[in-house]
Amino acid sequence: MVKRFLVSLLLLGAIAAGCQQETEQNEEVEEVAENEEALAEIPIEVLENEAVVHIDDLVQITGGEYSFDELHRTLQLTIDEDQFYMIDEVPVLERNGEYLATDDIYLVINEEDEVYLPIAFIEKGLNTPVTFKEETATFSWFGPAEAVGGPPESFNFEEWNVDQMVDYLDFLEKPIKGAEVSTIASHLPGVPRTYRNGFHEGIDWYDHSSGGNIYTDTPIYAMGEGIVVRADHDFVEYPSPEVRNQDLALTSQLGETPEYIFDRLRGRQVWVQYPNGVMNRFAHLYDIPEDIQVGSRVNAESIIGYVGNSGTSGAVNQDLTELHLHQDLLIYGELFWKPLNQEEVKEVLQRIWD
Image 1 (spheres, helix red, strand yellow):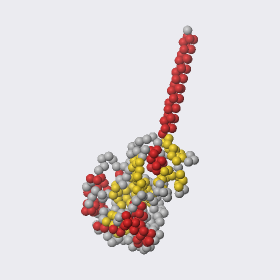
Image 2 (image 1 turned 135 degrees about the vertical axis):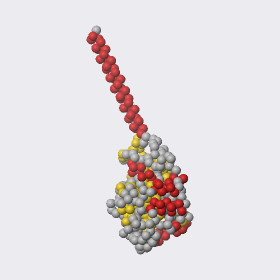
Image 3 (image 1 turned 90 degrees about the horizontal axis):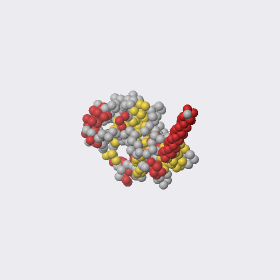
Image 4 (image 1 turned 120 degrees about the horizontal axis):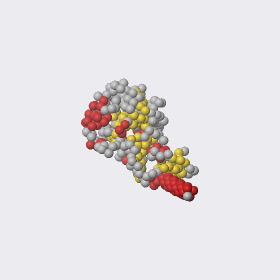
């Protein structure tokens, strides 16, 4: 009787163990199936010695959408809740109004104006590791996800007044120590720039209007704690006045300045991203210290460059006229002055820096 009982227990244990093993095996099969469903395979091509993916293939796999503006040569791309923005010839990626510290992501456009992105976009823009096969790349794709960074839902920048703008920006120190912010209308944002059929987007710091002693050895400071997202060490100036004038003639013909030309006219640049979506474009630089690289952490005492005139007619003519710092200040990808009139802009700048 006891032997029968023990045998029964052993049989029951074996059956239970078998069921448990079968359950675990089924779970493993289901997990493998789920992982296989999450893996996306995308064709890759090699253009300009770079492994790239076609934008159409990327949006088909991710369920995204995009528009490419042939005039401005800009890409607007939406994947899940994330909004991406890029400009041809500008190695900077904007995601939800903030700029990523990478110079591995840029637009690649072939002769037929087809748009490609480097594999680095998947790795760094979508935060997804990639594995390579012979003619494809594989990455995990689980479908919709929350946006990375960007303004909070309650962000109502378009409705801000002077006090709110000052409160948001008063952590920034002057880019040139001892200088005064100019109150000359043409040095402030929003005024027309007839020579290129556009508007002045930033703040100009000239010798004659900001207190003097501004030259090519005048250091420009990072203004606050942030991270460098662009540093044009390999900047190449317009080769001649004629080539620059061709760009300006095109702006006259179009009645506006295409974004890729606008970027050329800013000359050598450093961009610094600060917390809460604040970003500075420092333009027309003469030089950049070697230790300022994409990804460098900076603060108000960090020198990010020196005053110059790159991108201007003076630089193209190889003289030192038009020396000044041009500074564009943005909040989550929008120019800070958009909600304000020019008198309010002047008040904001004076309250921050004077």
